[in-house]
Amino acid sequence: MKTKPNLTFSCRSWLAACGLSVLSLAAHAQTFPVTVDSCGENLTFAAPPKAALIHDINMTDMALSLGLQSQMAGVSGITGWYKMSPEFKQALGNIKEIAPKQPSLENILALKPDFFFAGWNYGMAVGGEVTPTTLKKYKIPTLVLSESCIHVDKARPPASMELLYADYLKLGTIFGKEAQAKAQIAQWKQRLAALPKATGKEPLRMFLFDSGEDKPFTAGKFAIPTAMMAAVGGRNIMDDVDASWGTVAWEAVAARNPEFLVLLDYQNDGGADKLLQFLQKHPLMQHTTAVKNKRFVALRYEELTPGPANVAAIEKMARAVNR
Image (cartoon, rainbow, N blue to C red):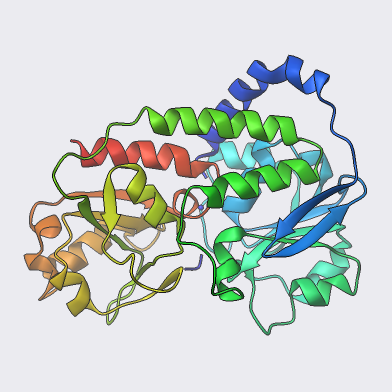
């Protein structure tokens, strides 16, 4: 997927978590060095980064919700694809964007960051010029988004909400905010545990439509929407696709007859409404239960890629499923 956070939620939830844990934070000052796992490789930090570069809107939302602005030298991969909410713009402040889409090695070296948070197909490409290996030569450690590890490690487990929790905790630990991250994760788990689940003998058959006409681009076994659908009692009908994000055949989607659609709203060119209209005219998809009954929820990019916006998006999804 090219690759968007309900920052309103993020900031509010962080403030709530922060408020609950001020005393505990003071009582448990974090010590360094710290070591975290990044796609199976250990990354050790003797001290928190002071000039981080964060790629993409979902990962930037993680950093902003942890209050890392003063330790961020730049961001990349946001304005070339997405519309920023007023809340996101305010939280980002004057932190500059070095590339509207994928950053080049030249872009990164010019910024002189001491840390890079990105992922495979989220700012980096396997075999490309920007990788953890190429950046290591310049003493720039790279934390790789866990969802994207499947591109270099085929033995990864299917998607679960750990994709969000693990990365958020790693980021907090690296920046000396482990306790804050743990408090936020605990609050997220409480919110998800309180959700109503879809009713029925079998899980609700759900399908995510990102884009594409000849073939739909969607989420497979290793992408976080599969875990988000499970969190509301549904099942991604493409959870047997051995990929994170990828294309499938319309015939396969229609044959599995989705009962509920998740439409990725890029907020441009007609957005989710255009996706639904396309499905309503499609010779195969127009006959599926979800399309005939207009059962869908529209979610933005940052709500469907690992980041703080996932939790509010799952709540939104649960309301739509149980409507």
